[in-house]
Length: 475
Figure 1 (tube, rainbow, N blue to C red):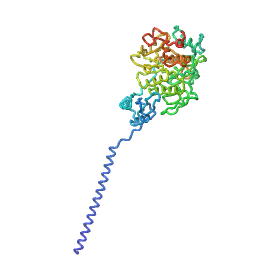
Figure 2 (cartoon, helix red, strand yellow):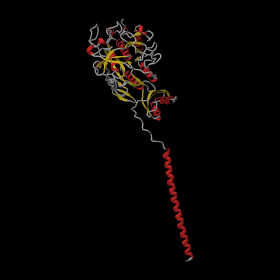
Figure 3 (cartoon, one colour):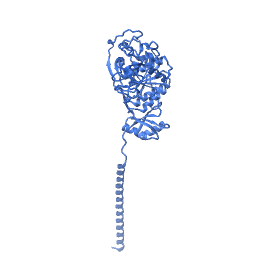
Figure 4 (cartoon, one colour):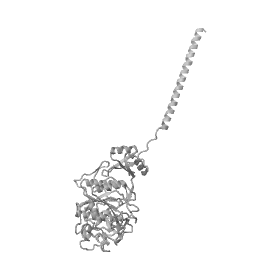
């Protein structure tokens, strides 16, 4: 072989070997890059946040009520809530600064309240949205066939009136509120609006239908920034954020009948006011349970209607809780600033409210009247709460017959029944003196009581409600 050919072959071999080495290195680099990419992907997967948990429905009951400091706007509140995975459900336009916040992570309400309270530069106060429930009243069915009307001077022709001992006691003399005498002066006025803040009212009941509030054409539908526009033809359901406050429990209907079942119409019973306007405000459900937020929402509604020209003068509250709520207190105060009297049941635990508070009756506000219950012998009812400084007045509250669901009537006992007796007399006074201020009305009711021995040391006035004397008549 020629020496030159040998070198040519050697050179070709070197080139081939070098090329093979280069190709091999390229494959090694490719494999290394693939491995590196795989490791990188795995690392990213390991450190990536877990997928977010779906939020709870925004229709759930809000967990906390937060009072924001002046200057914190609605947009600020929404931004603050969103940063905590919360939702602004509603702000109470007439209870300044307060908003209901729904925690979408379903955390403990007390813990959520503490989180907001810690934001001391923005938040003044925060509290859980407490549960409210009806006090345990006693109910008994009654039969209209067993309650025959007995003629009395000035008595209405309602067939069950003879069993309404609180209006005209057929047993112990004068152990009633003196309704017959009061009716000589007035039987009420449809111009006076009494809001029943309860489980709603059966506004189709035959003995109530003529005295139920209907929104006049001159009053616009209720509009709320968060809730939207609500066709509030007969009031407001704060539990459903709707305009149908139909009662599905019965309690609110019973209270409404005491205040204003139509009188002298040959049907059922007579209310303390034969003519009045009852505004149903529903915040308690079928089982008798509600919340602080919904009670405030309903009070906020009543204030709105008052500012739009509805003559809401009284709110009746026959329910309670042992949990203090600053938000509810502020709402009731706001109602008082609008001239609305707030009449509250003292509770049915046989306890001293000065030692174990019962709300809302224990709020020390100038528009609140707290009411204990009496039986037909003028004795403090065995179940009734009392309190020398915390309960103001007593009224009949045992074996009270009133309206019930489905055109029925039922007998019930409780301070829940005593409170609307006071609300009813308050409405009578306003029918006679429509320009009386809220403070003068409260003073009149408390200063015109009949003093009775069983209440000495038990209530602030030591007396029983008296409709006749509240109207300036000697009973």
